[in-house]
Amino acid sequence: MTDPETGDPKCPKLVKPGGVIPESYYNQEPIIPDDANLTVQVVKHGQKFDLNYDVDIPGSAIRYIFKTDEGDIGLQVMLQTGTMAMKTVQALEKHNTHLVYEDGSFTCDEPGKYILRFDNSHSWTKNKTLHYFCEVIKPDDIKEEETYLQTERDRKSVV
Image (tube, rainbow, N blue to C red; front, side, top):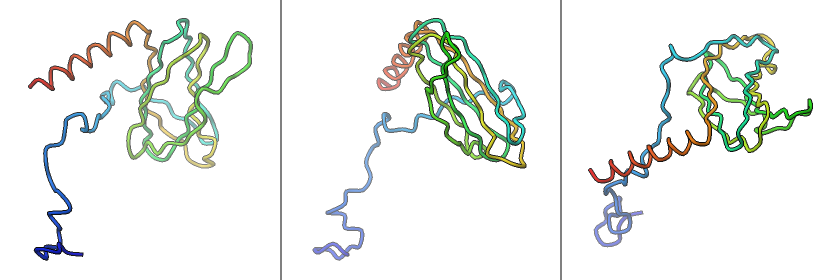
């Protein structure tokens, strides 16, 4: 296909190349903590590793970031309420975190014990070295952080 008037294969009259890309389209990379600040845990082959967080205030959030040295690992999030019953908050999903960090967060809609389960049960032979950071953020801190981020965005858009 070529431009019918000029014969140019780039068709500049049909496809308008270039232009300024708005900053809102820029990639929002997560802030990755220095590896020295990550906790290290070996998850043996065929095993699971649980992190337990007691959340007392509804609307809190749990934020996490993790990676493995090699191979994939599963992550599942569950809520244990007053009884021993477990409710799935986030279904088990495998992540290739030896290639790139996995980060995320979720809102804790109800109080209880939230369990982040790192699952290596699919691996018969390989242990996984897990590097992770997790924290519970209270609703007031979430609002404060959102206000700070909005202020930073506004400041950058003025420049």
